[in-house]
Image (cartoon, rainbow, N blue to C red):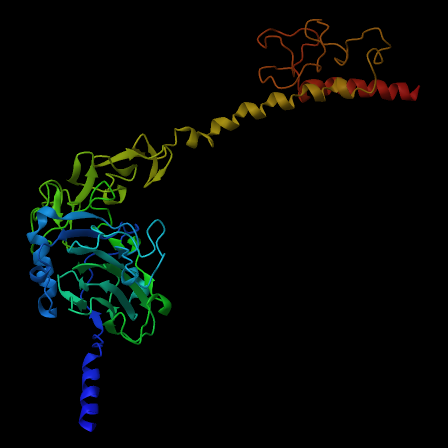
Length: 493
């Protein structure tokens, strides 16, 4: 009996499903490309049917990844390819009393059944393999963090990352296992730098239940790998893992979708990744670092021939007919011929220039019609201080003409008071003395420099009549003395 008990314990120990914990992965190589500014378009998913899964799907870790890739390339003719535009939660939603195909994230994707979105084939009898490829966007807040990638898979799954040098980093490698088709597996990845890294997920389904969920968790977690029903059953959704979304994945280094239609994509043989030429893709496309057919839209692979751009046309730009090498992408790539022109990049990708606005300052002057011209003193700018502005006429002697200060203006008496009224024109105050005209001597407006007597419109060349004297202090002095004498005489009386 004792021996029987020991044998039973050994048998029970052998029947316990294997539990394993993979080693954390450090992605130390450089990223394939910098982070694009756009949101990702999603992974490219390809599915091929197997008529003999026992031969087509390797069951050892050493041959699983290479074997599934070989199977996918050998069955290019029956391959169905499209862009996965939903979170990575796939299922054939089989419920035969068991719901192994539902996974850990049930009802998580709007518009899809409770177990997840459809595979390329979602019946319970078709054997197929699925390969998903693209670039994962590693942001700065993901660097040097313990990122746990988790999978719920039926029947098998693997995850591999790639850097710029095409160095591969296996993260998960869970081939199909007889008797334990449904698995949960997690492992930790540390990224040394932000940017785009190649990603490849492989999955197979031999029959009945089919499921593939990929999720991620940032934080402390003990990684594990074991059959889905083996205790302890740890559901990833309950542990804080979240499904990866299309926005996390790109199809080209530039961040652009592979094809104009957002649902279209194409995979190529990884042996042609980043190799010169088309790499088995159609004209104008190449096999990029993620082993996807992508537009030849970079300076190293540009245009229909996917050739590198030269020194005179170093940029690969989009045109109506496709991508072409050009002088510029925008005005920052161009240089103006002088400081009175602005550089521009035309729609065809050629550098040109346009004149600066007239009056813009330049070295030694201002821009005028695209030329830098010095400031000339003869221009309105210099004329502002010209002596002609303050012409002598402004201060003409006529403004201070003797007329207003005429003796008649300060005469002690009015007309006729000098001699008793017998000769009203003696003192020149009331009426003019030039020829007997009745015009006032000082009543005209001041300011005429040509007037001799302080405002008279008469021609100065004519000989004046009357007293025969000229206007001014020296001519009026005798008249003033005579007037003074008359006043004194009258006072004595």
